[in-house]
Length: 225
Image (cartoon, rainbow, N blue to C red; front, side, top):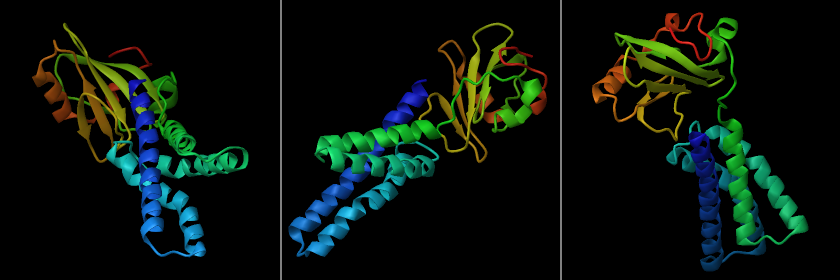
């Protein structure tokens, strides 16, 4: 849940930052440039497309990845909100910021893979997660699947005695995560462990991650091997 909240807040901040920079740039051009009415109208209409383009790198910088999806999805609610505000309200800076920030927060939320779909592996197989079935080579530990849904695989690496290590696999480039992050070409892996887990265990998990689908075959969510 915290990952979703961080990504949503970052989406709102990226939208406000990108569109704010465009508005400031246009205001400076209008103040110091010798522009006729047609150029002013052109610059006003350029706010939305230029702001949408700048939102892409802003989202990327704030680790909302992949960034192009929310940048594109957020364009429609921004245009809709701007039109409704111009028709029924006053386009003040605060109201515009709320529309832009809310639009991109919703866009990020809508394009984030949603955990929580409790599916069974024997019915759905690897296609349910749509991420590679990566697992470590760690003797004396077993895999306990916690959750699987499109775009997410969450499991625990459980030792014979002692605390477990949480491993979450997301699509490549997925940002806003905590813990030991492993960036791969096919996935982003977040490894989180408590203070009682030796650092060598975490590093071994990170270093030995590889596709091991046989460790997941026949397991339902919440049951280990």
